[in-house]
Length: 472
Image (cartoon, rainbow, N blue to C red; front, top):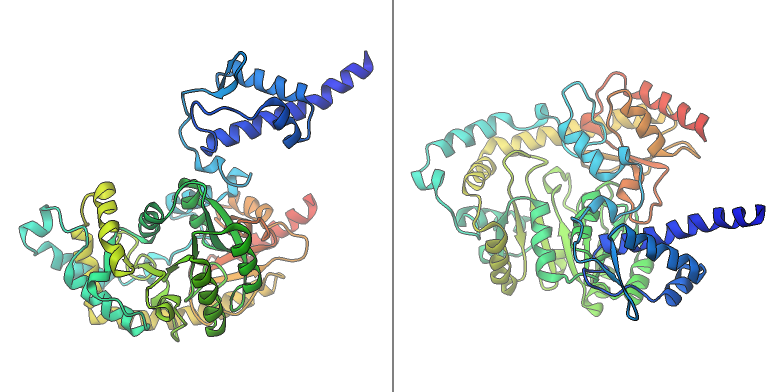
């Protein structure tokens, strides 16, 4: 009797594991409504369990109405499909520090909450007077500007301005190659709709901006992370991934990388483009931090001439996150099908936001403001780096520009544990693994130097590190 009970206790976790795997496949749409489940024998082999364990798991799923049994035929996914939950498709993380929750906390935080982990500058660092003038100018516009739908391509004068700005970075794109969108995220979403099918593979940097992961989950593709070094992605690992996974896309920042702050070198850019050209891989280059640069970094889109590359960007980090506006610069023959997708999903452009952002970018005070911000950020990076070093948090590198420091915590400290402690003190941090597809950055944390002026930040970090040491 005693041995029988032991066997049941051992079988229960295995049964639960089989059920979890089937539920995961259903949630990720790998198994669609009506699809036949793997046979009991083949799934037992795949999960390294007994056939009786799989039978038990399938029967429990039938009882839960997740699947249906057809005698003599097998088991099938029930017709009712649960709503897509992006949080369920990624790695298993503590909900308090997963990417969606970190974003929610930062977006919905009260003024009393400190946000060194967020990805934008405080309102006091933004060009408020430039925006007020742009708003006043837009309010005096024609009635159609305030009321009507607009071209899905976006305002032509704005696209002409963007064409000139891109030319300053070596990216030759005429206005007819540029489409305005609501944000950088909207740009990637449209491009994924245009270029990807569910199940295809996309390469991203590891670490990278965490919302790349979330958006790609929504498109139900396979994501493969490539370790990111001080001069760009690990080219040997990149080539290996091309051979093993036959990816369709590579998504990256090449100016100021998020979260590391590093810059792509010309040699690495050249090798990457040779590899992507040979493999037929399209590159999406997110250039959202362009106006933070002290010196212009190489752009893949400039080297490639927008043949197999796309550049996207927006102005939420330097101008306003409230007036949402971004762009796509793409091969000329892509613009028409992308416009069709935009009409299908958003119908028209956002004329008011485009008018406001266009007016602000033309304002001579915007350039002067950004010169001041770059100097202010340079001072903040030095100050925050020294403060963090005093408690054993060391920058992975000293970035030449931008708002981020990517830092290594003291040996053996889990950044997620420190972030959990900080939440109890009304502080939102960004632990490394929310940026890592391979979950290889548990000892890292990203700091936004423009948001690191809270007088208690270093004290909270020191206490969080001590708490993490005690719990390990």
